[in-house]
Image 1 (tube, one colour):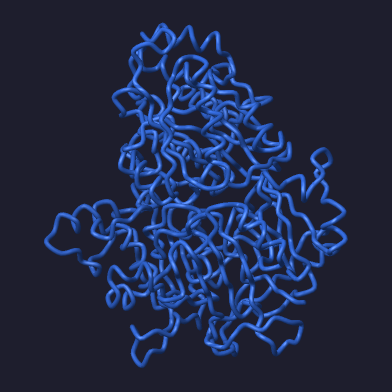
Image 2 (cartoon, one colour):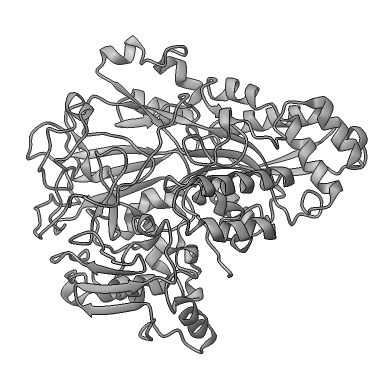
Length: 621
């Protein structure tokens, strides 16, 4: 059965967030007995968006949240075109999905957002959905009289069908392919037709009334409900898409807690969000974990969302300006860059320094389900392919790299180094991080031997290798270390430092023979990482390695529907080792990000598993 499952919005630059506490808790999603965090309808008053921001504890003063984004920013604000975590973060204040993660509960749990209750199913194939009533799209001139209309079931189906329309250049079709009854057939027929018909029926989609609909899956899919909380499945109105066309990616219209006008996004510089005065009834959660009480996270329980009036996001491609802005009290929290880690934390104990503690700052370490690697394009004439010659060349490169030195120099020696692509804490992760099949260095002697067996003794006759990496942070320094490691075996590296959007474009177009990325899992299952190597997901899909292995693909198609079990774990391990033997990448590492939080910021329980939690934050002097 042909499948194509991939992931796109969790790509990040490898140098961002460079610290790792040596433990990661296993996230388990409880899909039953979930509470509803939002219900009913209503609105709030908001200051005039043109008024200057006034900060202070006076409840009548405008509250402005100041955030940093460690990149040039998003590529598009159209959810179906999202390609990175930065697109995700930029879209989340504006758009909403059917489900979301509970803000305070751990392990992570799903709860309704645009739904009035969790989807129900008797057989795991047919699901019944009930939309929450009283949810309106943002006021916008695309609607009659400029007033946002109510969300209805057809909006959900329309938004999903946009992903099937190839003229939209969508990046998230993997979420639907070979999953919903009749949807693949609909996609093919409509894209082959003279005009894409959004009104044509799909056998697996049934609208019951304005607020109820039903979907039918081809087979039980392990991750189905998780995907309903992913930003690519955000619901959008057809009126906005029809009116703005290509401009919709700069003129977003959703149901979210904040609005963003077309001029409020200055690419590469800033984003400015305004409180949605007509946001539906959503409240700060009452359910919490015991430790949330002492952290002050339970005090706002029952407060209507969103809380702050504006969110100002500033883009930083270099860490020094961001660090200086934070120290000047112009940012409310940041991920501490590695080069400033010892100014904020004791390197040995990882505790916040007395200087910041006495000023009222707090620290939050955030473990990641993380996969940092250096990838090879398996279709590249020099580095790609499955011949013994090219495979040994890749293996030699892998063995030449010293991940321990990289961890110590750039990550304060607190990352977890491991074999494979499955992060610590997930089924299929190797015991003690070491797999039987491993080409993790440093082993210069073995690397030289394999390079000679590949036909390049001491690098003789080997052309220079072109390596692409996102600029910013300490990318230059990490690249120089990589160059030095490879020079020990005679391999010459040509480094291309490019903006992150350009890196994504080059990798999507298969122009980067060797590249650096980091992948953060969208949900706590190894399937999310293994789909990065599933053949049909090749670029511009999530398989940027363009790796193809028929045996691997067959096992992937098997595990995607299997429940957790010892049998499934064994298959995960076999898949991991198949990839390791072919060496389509060098790695791996997993991080913990260490955040510093300003004393004026309230309600912060920072996470990177989901990104729609800015609506819970508050600020005060």
